[in-house]
Length: 114
Image (cartoon, rainbow, N blue to C red; front, top):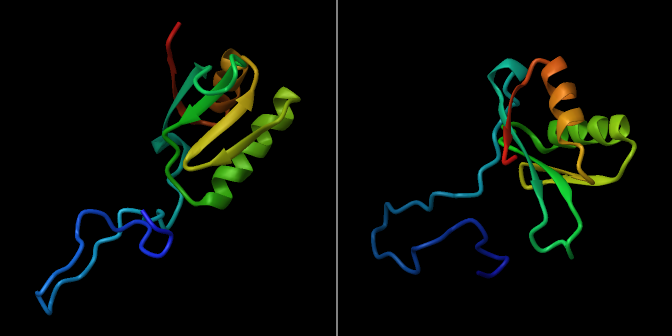
């Protein structure tokens, strides 16, 4: 998929003059309150050279709020990481600590895996 039409999939050409593209890459306009967020925390090693990371998924909101939450978690755990594509990646296995921090902030959190 080219960068020019990123987010538009499945339609190559339409002869309908009233046809409108529907973007599949729409970002939420606002961030849901913490109590309505349903976050998943799991340990991930896929395509990371065998290194373990704590992966937090399910965040619904703006990129700025995602980055803010990611920064807070990274600071509390004392490690690096990133926040992009509605995921927060924390370097290392910090599942229990992340779950405790998110629960204290009012998020609904589920641990995925053992």
